[in-house]
Length: 132
Image (cartoon, rainbow, N blue to C red; front, side):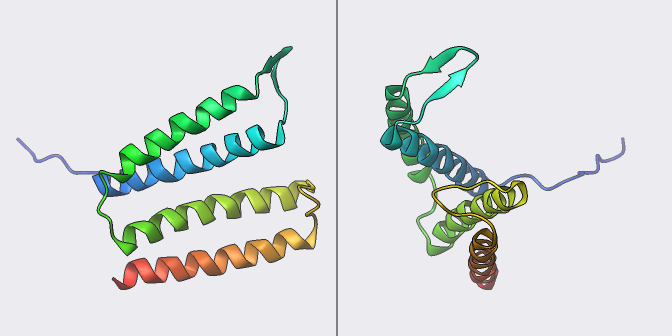
């Protein structure tokens, strides 16, 4: 019987935990901002209560903690988490710039300046991770 050829690498548990932390952190930040700013969110005609975002923040903190305690506590792991967060930020900033969205008084060319800073940080973190 022929040996099966793998089409892609398996995702390492450490990288999966880091990905979970990044996703939970981004969603948690959005819920935290909604809770603090009191922003209304509607699904159809139904308004989601603001206090639900407060509960979501607590649940997400718990999930982040559960993933964090299972990771290796190294500078490299922290760099991976930061790189993930800055990558998501870069995507958001470029999207806001492309669609001309003003957010907290930021618009236009300012988004490109923020994107350049994000890229420099991502490259620096990538270099740090690969160097180790």
